[in-house]
Image 1 (cartoon, rainbow, N blue to C red):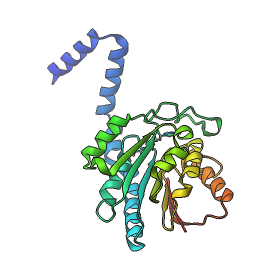
Image 2 (image 1 turned 135 degrees about the vertical axis):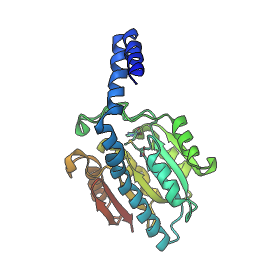
Image 3 (image 1 turned 180 degrees about the horizontal axis):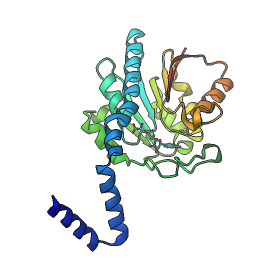
Length: 245
Ligand SMILES: C[S@@+](CC[C@H](N)C(=O)[O-])C[C@H]1O[C@@H](n2cnc3c(N)ncnc32)[C@H](O)[C@@H]1O
């Protein structure tokens, strides 16, 4: 062990100082109790409520069958929710899965969304890596489409026309920001049907302030559309879900 440590330190001392510092910081993190706690408790505790909600939705859609069409996901990054959605929805439903993302990470952050955690370009996964992750989870090519682009550009009438013909069974919104949620809600209107479940993954962002983030976008959207009716299906911690009536 001491020989290994000597080799490690010796190798570090031959590297450019900035690189050596980065490697040392990563190695320190990997060995730290905080990293063990994160992997054992913190990350699973963040994932489990999402899986539970997807199962709740599977049951809701099965009981209220048929609810046919798409699983739309807005904000796809490392395909964690997309893979979980495939895992829990593929057995009972014949939905087509559509991933909408810039695949370039977050956009420029507008004033209303400013918070230290959000930075342009953060949370980037390329289209190719995203598709590879989905394939490795067993998603066949003919069940997954991706739409690349920032929403203010990509969620246009052409994209609507590409998918119209079917409605949405589930709309999963995981894009963190108010400015990103507004064009999504405008885009999904013609895809709503009785029973469409709309999920917000970041309901408690921005200190759970109802005047920011996805919560503000949803309130403005429902106020602007009195002809549409929704009922709340779920609200817990970071997650909320509504059903289109
Ligand atoms: C928190 S991550 C999503 C995590 C993902 N559901 C998962 O399971 O790995 C947020 C994603 O939203 C995307 N995003 C946010 N705002 C966007 C916008 N205006 N246009 C396109 N993509 C956006 C980012 O590129 C990023 O992939």
